[in-house]
Image 1 (cartoon, one colour):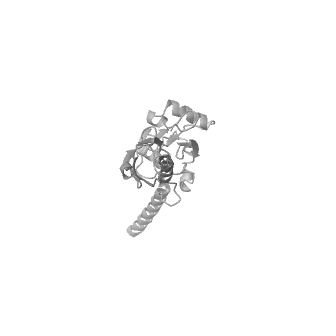
Image 2 (spheres, helix red, strand yellow):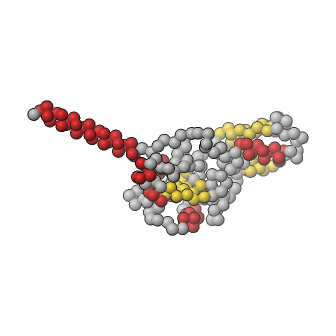
Image 3 (cartoon, one colour):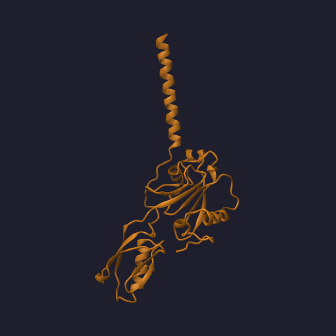
Length: 233
């Protein structure tokens, strides 16, 4: 009799362990990976850039991208760096310096990176600004904010971004069904992206996000968006 109880207990434990393992695997999002398909990094305010002018070494220096998205250099003054890749900024500087130097040859390299913050708002436990520890998606950003509230409409999460110089709003499905599929809609977040978890469906998404930018975002985030959906830099 004791042996029968022991077998039953072992089978029950095995079944519970298997169930827990399955549930845990469903609750863990797929880890993000890095690949050559990722877009090039673009400079943001607060980034430090090393500039080497091979044809005029006296112009070599390290500069920091200002809050207005520009760097200030001798001979050519202020030049926009925000939203440009290293290669794009180098090309812009070659053109600018060509009026001062005969054959400008430049190298542009990022030295240090400014704060990589995202804002998570709406139906989450702790709305606010969060530092991105690495490449994360909207689901992982919500996790940083303490997770979803019971009132959250997880299938209609909104992400406001201006990663490539233009502002856009996308809807992301972070429901349990999407989790089992590996969150196919979730993309890697960029600096100053806004993740908003609604309580109910939103009919006019763009209008809502414009009002949200105006009324709810911290000033350091709303600075990067205007009410027409254009970047301010």
